[in-house]
Image (cartoon, rainbow, N blue to C red; front, side, top):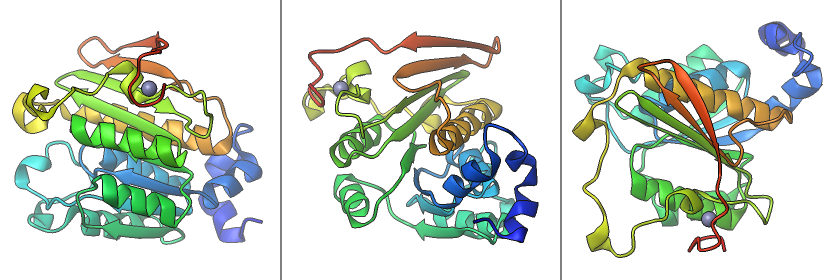
Length: 254
Ligand SMILES: [Zn+2]
């Protein structure tokens, strides 16, 4: 049952037939883990907090740098050198004091993720990282723990979005799409924003899209990126969708 304050705060989305009071109650009961609080995690977390996701867990071991501010809209210049997860939690709590926000100032790795996902039940994980190794780790751990995941990434002007519902045994996974490199020596040089550059609003689009998919997922609406690679090209404003090819040789899920 929603309180009067909740009915007021979320009135504009409750009036949508796709959400309604029932959908808002689902959002309020949801627990979501956001890994990475940079250019994707900033808009994703802001929108999920504003929408009234009941409990948000924010994970990032980094501190705010001036070069982050071109795209990481959670942070202001005076946040320099502060822990991103802590600043983010303060900002989200200020935006919406009705929800519970937990800051984790750690770099998520396999052991940490595994512990978190076994300690309490998460409805969804958002992968907002910019690193292929941790993406594969999130894919593995979420699949193992049967927690659905919404993943996004941006290189330059090009964005990708894909979701998996690992509660379904037959779900494909990220490694079906992009098999992990075998052996450390085969790994390509770490590619991320600091090495290839990125346009800020493209991250805003993709992070917002992650929040959108998360809300749809939790409210029980069709999720357009489920088992589908959604590609966004910021240079031309074009979206393309690729059905996920079945990969019977996936080392993770087959
Ligand atoms: Zn797979």
